[in-house]
Length: 321
Image (cartoon, rainbow, N blue to C red; front, top):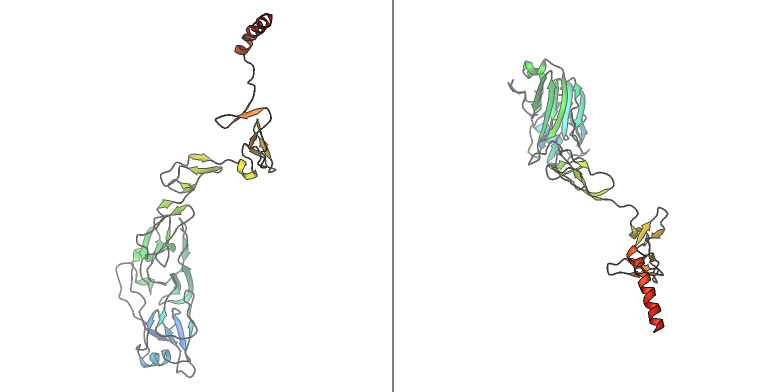
């Protein structure tokens, strides 16, 4: 009698037993797992997901596993194996879900890997009679108006409650359950147990805005702004506007750098003896205590004009004496 796949009992909940650790001969049509072969062997053996060691039985399987010339070949999408056998041997579905057109993981297959970014409100219609989930993966399906979450493989969709199987099926989301704490709705949990954050988000659970982003959706700060009111609760108001053509970009201390890279000095300033542009007061100007360059003679005002006759009279009296 050939080894068989474990047949789970009918369950009332959407979850069914995981794939059992066993083997199948070519008499079975399942395409899940890998095919084990060796020169001169009586038959090839199909291995279901699981761990195989030097103590694995029955005898035919043990003989192939310990054969130095044994080779492995993946049977379907989602399974990657080395061509040579090294014990202990782990056969496992890559992070994601494998969907099959027939029951017992047979027929045409489609592998959907674990997403690396949020899927949003999209859905992918499927025609499936069985599907296999990798370890620590949750599958969310839309069935008519129902949303059903699976955390284990389903060898036969007909085993599920009628409320699940009556409507057309569509994949809503595939998530890893490896992250602790769970990622926020803004991140995706990877198979390694870390949250992958989209642009603008940061934190172990993608719960915060990265530097330069603000608001619940972590939008970027306004353009031409060096610093804004950032963070999840930030308003995005610009706090430090960006200044274009800073004087330092063209060695210009007290002036403005033009788009051509040349410095235009502020009034009163000129090139210093050390060659630095706009670093010294020009002729006819002096440096004040505040660091500005001012003219030596202040401009005439109405007050200074009123003093002119008095000064002229004083000068004439002085000469008469």
